[in-house]
Length: 333
Image 1 (cartoon, rainbow, N blue to C red):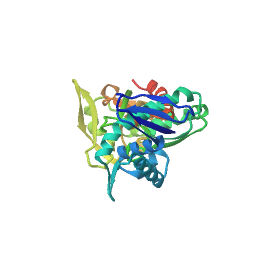
Image 2: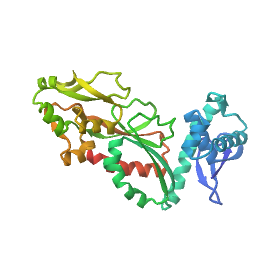
Image 3: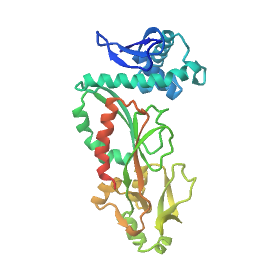
Image 4: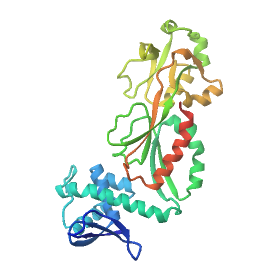
C-alpha cells in the first residue's frame, strides 16, 4: 500500500482517508507539499529502528536483508533525508529518523486499523514465530494445535520449544510464553496466571530411600538439581516458611539444564524434583511419579505471554495469542 502525504500551512493536525483508487491514503500536516511512499517501506524502517539490525528486521518480517535495505533506501529517497546511520556493527537513527519514527508509528497504526475495516473477513496468512516451554508445549499446546491451524489454514507456525530464555527481539519471535519473573524491558506482557508446583519422586526411589514425612527426613534424601548453568548454584529444596520461601541445602547425584532431562532423572530414581504440576500430568496419572510432602511445595511460578509488537500487533499474531491464552490459562491458578 502507498501513502500520499500532503503538507499545508493553513491546516493543523492530521487525518487519514481512502482515495479514489482504494490503494492510497492522504495524511495532512502543517506545510504545503504532497509526497508518496510505500507502507511496506515504513514497516521495514520501524522494524530496523526497533531491532537495530537489517538482518533481524528481515527475519521478523519474513524478508531478505537486501529487500529490507532496498525498502528503507527507497523511503529515504522519497523523503529526501537519511533516516538511519549504518555501520559494520550497528544501525542507529539519525536526527531525522528520530523525528520520523513516532509519526510513522502512528501512521502505520491508522493504516492497519483502516485496512482492518474492509479486510476483516479475509483469511489470515503468513508465518508466526513463537517460543514455548517444553512441558507446556508437549502437554497442552501441541495436542490442540490442529484446532488453530484448521481454523486458519493459510498460517504457518514456526514453534520453538526450549527451556532457555530466548531474546524475543534478536531471535525474531512474534510472541513467547515465559515462566518465572520477567526481565525484559520494553516488551508488551500479559499475565496468564500462576503455575502451582509439587514435589515428586519415583516409586523405585521411594522404595530405596523411604518416603519423607518431614523436612528433617530430607537429610537422608537426594534431589535432581536443575541449573541452566550446570552447577553454578547449589542444589536445594524450596519450601514455604512464614510469609516467604526458604532454600534447604540438599545433596544431588545429577545436575541437568533441561525440563525433559529433569523429569527423566526423577523417573530413573535419581532423586526428588520440584516441578510444575501441569507438566507432570501424564507421569502422575500413570503412577510413574508420586507426590510427596505436599505441605512443603515451592513457590508457584508466574506465566506470562510476551510480544514485541507494541501497539501494532499483526492480526495473525493477535489471533494466535488469543487462542494460546485460552488453551493455557485454564491450567493455571
